[in-house]
Length: 475
Image (cartoon, rainbow, N blue to C red; front, top):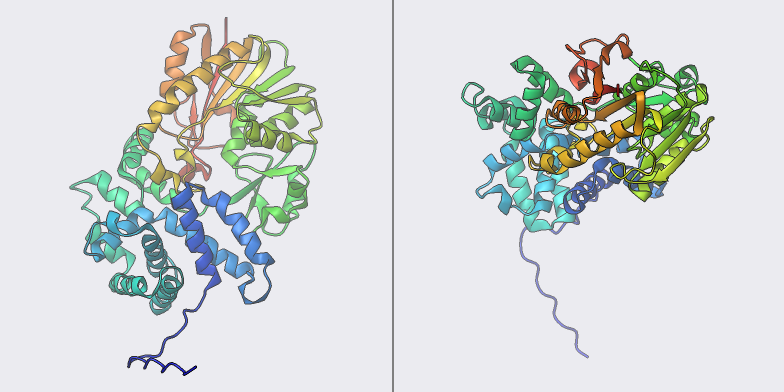
């Protein structure tokens, strides 16, 4: 059999196999999961990092690799709106016509150019190599051309070009500069009550990496024990809080592994503490957490109830989330029960409880530091979907508490339609109730406003934007 003649090579540079960069490939995979599956980065990224740490050879991650991958994913998601505006100025077609995987590679590249200290030439070359691996040579040339345009200016220069002047359109200016949808900017501004400085500080805080905060569950762990860990410092407001400075790993803390402590934002801790310390008329034996998943507040309430000999019933509608609550409460020193039940169709008799917490489902606009992708998924019409459920849960909570008992209505959103509007509407229908002043129950916490309810803020308190209203049933 005769040998086929070899096809002559075309003149030019010899073919070079693309260089695989495990860190950037992992970041790209995380962004694709967020985009394609509506996943949350805080759920997608940890297993990807864990798998990368377990690998052998050059693809095995060390701490610096994990830190860079985390920064690339979260930084890109937080600044997505800003980066989209910049990319749109550098391409000759509407952004919606750019394939999503290409847009993810471009966004990762723009973040390295404008949001990190990575040198421009390294950011461009690394992004082009990533494009060659995950997209192919043809699209890599497009990525190269766009990123070279982006590299001609810094972030401030680009913002001057792509953001409308503040005086002409304040909300759109803030939306582009601080990477929030315009309707979210408007809603947060309304909740703050006006003023440019406050809204700019809040939007900037939403784009900061949040600290990891631990809670020492009373009777099971102490703050002093947690403070013995590397990179641990005291919390600001909660007596049970300990913050881990940058690089602190909760999974490395023995008390967290054993369930005696947990990861819990300080705002969430303050809500549970305020309910536990609210003044009651009468006995204090039965507590209810009516929306207990995933279990952080329930675990703290259960520990506080145990110190007083009180019983906690933790109810969660979704069975898999009820399982998370059971895990969080496992080992609680006092009596408790976890059930899967719908809080709007109570599995308990009216007037059965002395203290009731309803931390209702919401848009999550108060936790955009932790879930930056949520700002791009939520729509104004989502508020209409949550409204009946929020009102229904608060009504059920008021029916579950006895006369003289207290209900805490909480939500991780500062949107007025999810906070004061809900409380005002429901209390109109329940004349035998009164709002308690929640501010004295958060001792030492500044900037709590005129009351009687409380709105916490990332830029003021360093917490998620938790809302709390305390209601006593009077008849």
